[in-house]
Length: 133
Image 1 (cartoon, rainbow, N blue to C red):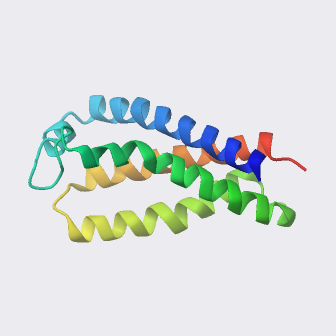
Image 2: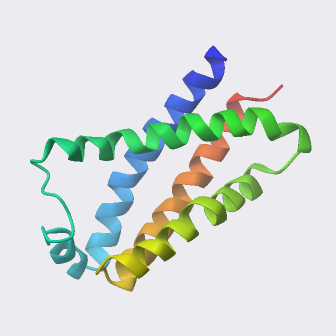
């Protein structure tokens, strides 16, 4: 269990770093997204203490999926397929309901979907490399 926790935390840290890098790239390609992020009617300002939860989210996903990986590795799913299935069950429905519920652009949703896929591919690769039996 200790190994799963350590690998889950490592995957979370990798996803957090990837989020920062990918968000910078997406915002450079689509600078209009920066204006959307500054809309305090939709998003909390970074000065709000609750925004610190943003930094914990990848660690929760990293830990949860490390546990799922450990429990399902016996079915021998390739790590990329595991990532894609996780993306289909976590990111796609989440972004569908976000797009339906909040006034954000489809470009923001597509950026988040892309970031989510890269995050899950990265985490799954880490699980594959570090949680082999």
